[in-house]
Structures are given as C-alpha cells and as structure tokens.
Image (tube, rainbow, N blue to C red):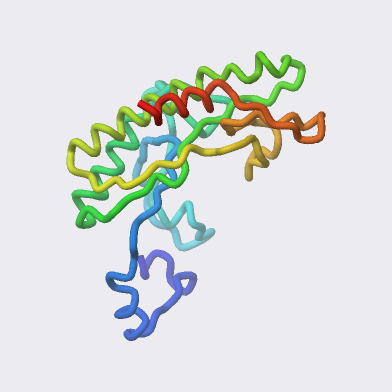
Length: 195
C-alpha cells in the first residue's frame, strides 16, 4: 500500500501503531451491491483512490449484470455478495464482531404518483428480505454478526443523487411540510422483527 499510495498515505509512529492494535470494538460494514473486479496495472500519473485499487470495477461480466438493476446505475441487487463479503472478513480477519451499518436500495422519486401508491415499495421489501436471508446463512457459517441497520429510516438527501431517489422506510412528502408516512417496507420490517 505504501508503494502505491506514497505520500498520500498518513504515517504513524511506532507508538501510534502499537496503540491501534486490538483497539476496535467491532467492524461496521455498509453494503449495497457487489461488482466484478478486473486487474489494471499501476500508474505513476493521475494517482487517485480508484487507480490505487489497481482494479476496474463493473456490475457487468460478458455483458450480463451481476444482479437486478435499480434506480441508481451503480446499485444492483445481489444478496450473495453480502454473504461472500462477511465470510471473507471472517476467514481473513479473525472473525471480528460485525454490524451491517447500512444496507438498502433506492427507488426513483416520482411525486406524480399518489402517496398511497408510492408507499408500496415491494422492491425494497424483496431487497431486505433477500439480504436478511443471506445474512442468516452467514450466521450459520459462524460469522460473528451482531446487528443490522436498514438504510435508511426515511427518505433523505443522497450524496450522489440528491433528492432524486428514495432510500427510506418512511416516505417523506417534500411538497407538504415534510410530512412522513410509513412505507409498506416499514410494516414488513416490523412484522419481520416480531417473528
């Protein structure tokens, strides 16, 4: 990593490094999707985070998508990926306590649809259901998974899409004083948790 990132990588003193060892309580993982990775050679010019990875990431392989497309061009539904990621962490990093700190899917914001129709977010229900089932398999495989947080509680500003998509379990009426309505996924999650 030092040879790839060079001066952009912070340096720690030996004392700082020692104080960091074993200092974490848990590992938080945000997971939305999975990509295929293809090796690319290192470069000495135009160094960036993406070039440092020495990988070209793509949701496509041989012209086929890794999973079901969504409202965001970077997010494909692939619940096997969360299982594979957590198994990798377990097998390579001494099975630390893990929390899924973000997991969710976006839908296009369409204010012309009546609110009662827009609240019927079956794609979000299927997304969370399939990912939670995959997480159950990871627990059965011995992964030290401690918690799961659906992203997000309510519709909000998305860092790369602004207000054009809806991620939340709670519908926010942007035209009516930000009034909130539970989506069907909120009721589904409540029922799931009470089982």
